[in-house]
Length: 162
Image 1 (cartoon, rainbow, N blue to C red):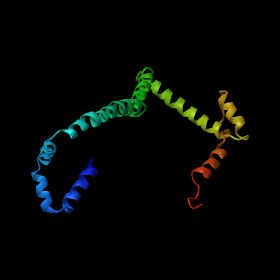
Image 2: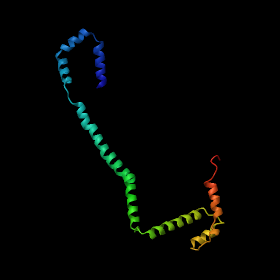
Image 3: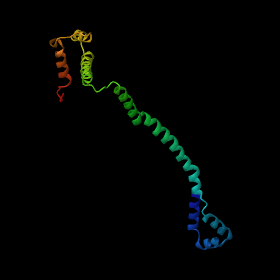
Image 4: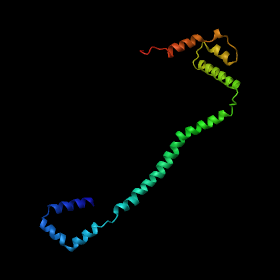
């Protein structure tokens, strides 16, 4: 339709203007002109039928189902709900007594210490670690400090230029 309008305008512009004046006085042209000059709301009809339906579908499916539903449940809302569940679980164990907090702190430190040496142990330290895991009290000088010093030298104090 747009191409036909372009060709019609091009024809009318290049035609002789005297002939164009007679065409404008023709009753058929006047009827066609008055029919087309009226607003027939074709744009409104296309917006209602096509654009609004696409927008509604996009809103209900893309925004409400995917963005507000799936992504939010696995994203920020899901993480907040997970932290809330975990904190209420641990809240049951918290009584506010100092000796229980001290016990948990020492117990966690010992577990971290043992897990550090068991995950990085070699054959030289395995007997000391197995004794620690068995619940024996190992003297301070028998702990694998040389292994800890070597681990520290290799991983924490390495020369940044190498």
